[in-house]
Amino acid sequence: MKKHVLFTEGIPTLIVIILLSAFLYYLHPLLTILGLGLLIFVLYFFRDPNREIPKQEEYILSPADGLITDITEVEEGLFIKDKVTLISIFMSPLDVHVNRSPIEGKVSFLEYKKGKFIPATKPESHIVNEKNYIGIENEKTKILVVQVAGIMARRIVHWLKIGQNVGKGDKIGMIKFSSGTQVYLPKNIEVTVKKGDKLKAGATIIGRYS
Image (cartoon, rainbow, N blue to C red; front, side, top):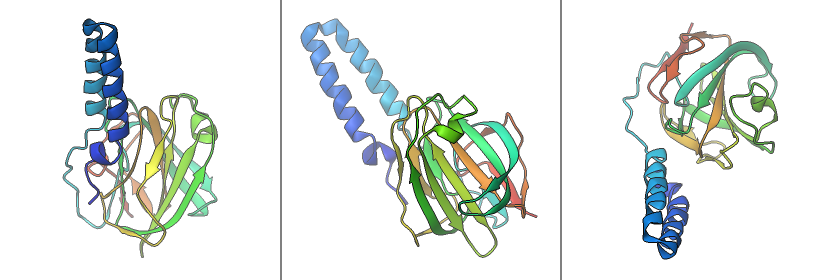
């Protein structure tokens, strides 16, 4: 299992905040309150809570914390290459930003695409923003997870390589600050969530094999 993201991804941000706090203290001791506030926010943002992972084979889990903003039928041409159900998830700065694998399987597809950084709340953000594509498959299905940058999210990371095996609910990456995640489900998956639902990565069941 991947280490706590505070240590793998948060250290550079913490160093910047500490240096900034020292500079603010140099300007005036009371300004240190601002640095302390930023430090508390960063520690909160990089929280990485343990999750109780449903182990039933037929369940598909959410890859991200956040709010479902849309569920639609689309044609997916990169990995699944068929008509699929697309679930779009908005991750606010207050959500846990660790992404988890929806299924157990092998990483068969990875692709990074440069793009813009418009707010993740805008519908076109999933089309024009910077993103990472992560394709995972097993003997029953293929799932495509897409990490989408937002106006504040300027760094998307994953901890995967082609051919790597991942367990259901394993940590696979994160997006720093507000952002979005998409998950593409093939037609053999029965969707069990709806628009407006709140999700938890690795814990909320979003579908099952039909």
